[in-house]
Amino acid sequence: MAASSHGEFSRDKMEERRKLAFEDIKNGLGQTLLAEKYEVSSMTASRWIGAYKSRGVGGFKKRKAKGRPRFLSDAQLSELREILSESAKDHGFKGHGWTRKRVRATIQKRFKVEIGLEQAYRIKAKFFPQRLTKRPKPKTGQE
Image (cartoon, rainbow, N blue to C red; front, side):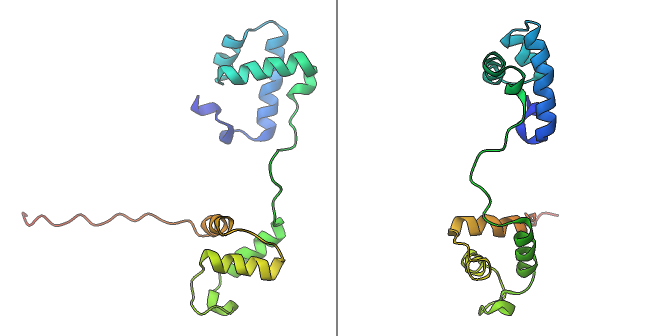
């Protein structure tokens, strides 16, 4: 089922796949075979069949994503990325590094948007992903 995980398909591709499934449902393909053919869970196949029965073709069209709207626009995120690429000291902080408190304070001051420390941490992590480095193997003394 890895090939069909939500993250690997664009919204358009998922809609296209559901339309193909619609034809199979219309032709009487059952839940189990539908799930196997499209490599989805039995629950997803059941939802597709329910959508077909209750809304017809309209049940397979992509809808606007649910969830909380973004608090910064693309332009603001781009500006923030530029700010965070500079030293924190250049923006009035004592040290050079960006902490989540500094990221939050900068967003609040620059964009007048209130966010929590966790959200500031996620933004910081998005712009500055931690790189894992291999630790050197300890010397055993036997060479």
